[in-house]
Image 1 (cartoon, rainbow, N blue to C red):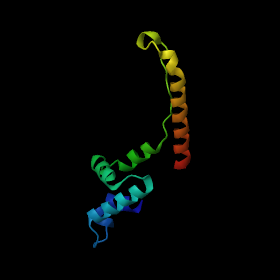
Image 2: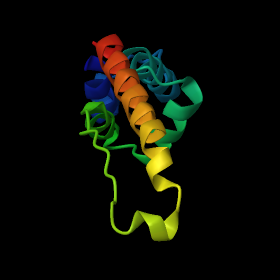
Image 3: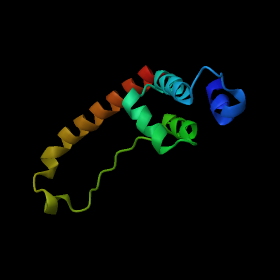
Image 4: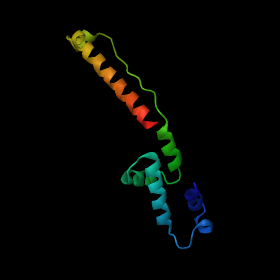
Amino acid sequence: MLLIQVLGDFSQRRDPETSRSQYLGQLRQDFCSYYGYNEFLMEKLMDLFPQDIMEFLEANEVDRPVSATLSLCSPTVVCPAYHEMIPWLLLYVHAVAIWVTAKRSNAM
């Protein structure tokens, strides 16, 4: 938070021996370490959202609901062997649910 405050009022709060690019580089490294992004992506995000980078990063940390929808409207017209695909589809949905659960437990 201190780096953001220094960059917010750079002329008054900066260390005379430290340049703005050094402060930005340190901030980028801190964001990469905290949020898990790589240097290249974080640099591009900071270029796109120079003032709102923290709000953008925090918004991406919020888990979105995971849902699967299945349209049952006239499946035989689209695929005559639809009834043969249902067990495979259910197996795939189950595998995705296991993967999402594992990702969420590793993130915490």
